[in-house]
Image 1 (tube, helix red, strand yellow):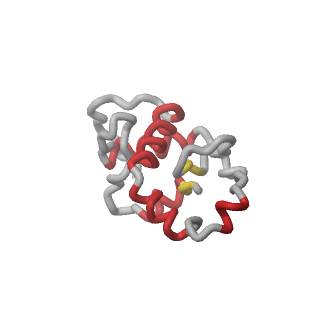
Image 2: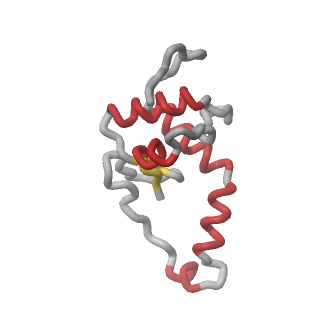
Length: 118
């Protein structure tokens, strides 16, 4: 699963982007988040992974798909809706996104000044 960068910027036009965290769990400011997303777009990235994903293609391919154990898929425990809800609540997901951003976006100054991106 992934997040479309242009989709975020479109959806949050005129709204604060306040859900991106750095690797330490500290929330990026709206300006910092927009700068990071703009930097990723400038690199050609279209997507951000929502979870750690081996082989993730940020340039549009996204997740290449991963095998699911057949027994697990058949069991009552395998409930995609429940798994997605748990995933949304997971701080690990946020940390993984933060880690991805840290690796793929340049370091921002501590107090970005005069960033008028949008």
